Amino acid sequence: MCGVKVGAFLNRRGLAVVPCVNPDGVEIQIHGSRSAGEYRSIVETACCGDTAVWQANAAGVDINHNFSAGWESLKSSELKSGITSPAPTRFGGDFPESEPESRTIASYCRTGHIAHALAFHSQGEEIYWDFGSYKDPEALKMAKILSCSSGYSVSSPEGLACGGGFKDWFVEKFRRPAFTIEIGKGKNPLPVSELDNIYRNIREMLVLAVVL
Image 1 (cartoon, rainbow, N blue to C red):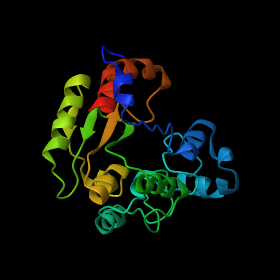
Image 2 (cartoon, rainbow, N blue to C red):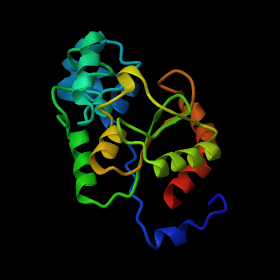
Image 3 (cartoon, rainbow, N blue to C red):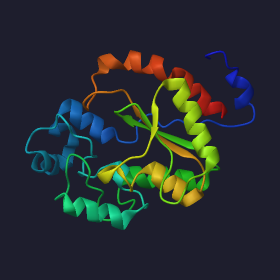
Image 4 (cartoon, rainbow, N blue to C red):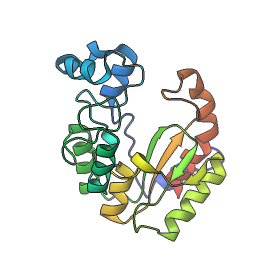
């Protein structure tokens, strides 16, 4: 793939792919609150009936704000922004790993030897690599390689995008490289029609992420 013999690398390392960490959010955004089942009333109250920009799970918790990394600071930022209860996005829950989705991913990482991790989100065409005091030169080197391949910029999140995320938790917990890749550019949710073009742009980067 992309001129790289990936099989040679997979002979000595594994690759785990989680296609979607937030299936609730996908179903709700596409099919509306009825797809939330017993959580329908929570969703309708949180979004006032408009699920067009829904990003949380059915309980109104943003999965990528539900990990134990910079938790106190994140909750303070949420409160300052008026986010105090289930919402379409940005509400991190009442405590870290309160949701089955975040607990499952964290549990898997705790029991497996994960050398490095990538979390794919949209949008912005950016690569986030550091968190807090974690400034590993090797991680930065990897981020720059991924950047050169994709054209995405190496960046740092700001405001409510800081803390509580999977990448933040992984680097703080294990002191190993992890990256948030913000695919595509535009306004969320990005149209499905953009997928082929996005994939063409990041295909080589995906291959490199396996072999680095």
